[in-house]
Length: 111
Length: 111
DNA sequence: TCCTTTAATCGTATATTTGCGATATAAGAT
DNA sequence: ATCTTATATCGCAAATATACGATTAAAGGA
Image (cartoon, rainbow over all chains, first blue to last red; front, side):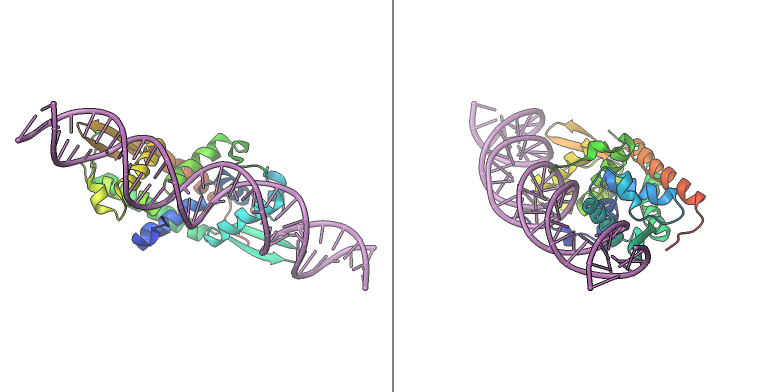
């Protein structure tokens, strides 16, 4: 039974969850770190660095791209990826807003 | 063919990914919002608010607790939950550190 | 003691994620 | 035209996640 009931939540909740999901795998965290460290965009270097098969890395890149966290352009026979800082900041900002604001209201936790 | 290769990444990458995973569902975002809004800890009120069955909510609470994002104490026949702000800040801080720092180094994206 | 309330856990069905090899695609080089 | 390189995509197997009803457990009240 059970199918996912994501639609039953607000759009903002779904968006934040989708952003978190894109970060919810160490391989994707690792990819973002690599992309951020090199100013120039990387393609298959990531495959050499990560302990995963080429097809798997490609899949993770696809997910990050679909989540809007990275941009990718085809450059001849290779692909160039880089972090979409704008989207990244937007989501980090929303998280901070949501929880810092709430935290400000409540001084302490009760348990 | 392996199955999850999470162990192949650094502990920090795994920790950040685990934190993100705990947030990677709208129901859990929603639960955190409810907990944050009420200073007093809530138990089954969450069940009334969320569009999910009691057992499902209980399961999401368990995941949040295992991730360390919330605390829970048994209070007679009911359970009291609240946000673990300390853990929350720790992870948010690490994310900000990682990506703000990296962003500071690189002025622009290339694609 | 028995009943009610509250919440955790079990069992189960289905959906999604993760990972890899194999194959397809696209463009430059020979 | 053919070969090589770099990536994306397909197909599949295994692991996880999501959801729910049923059951269990724990404590207060009748």
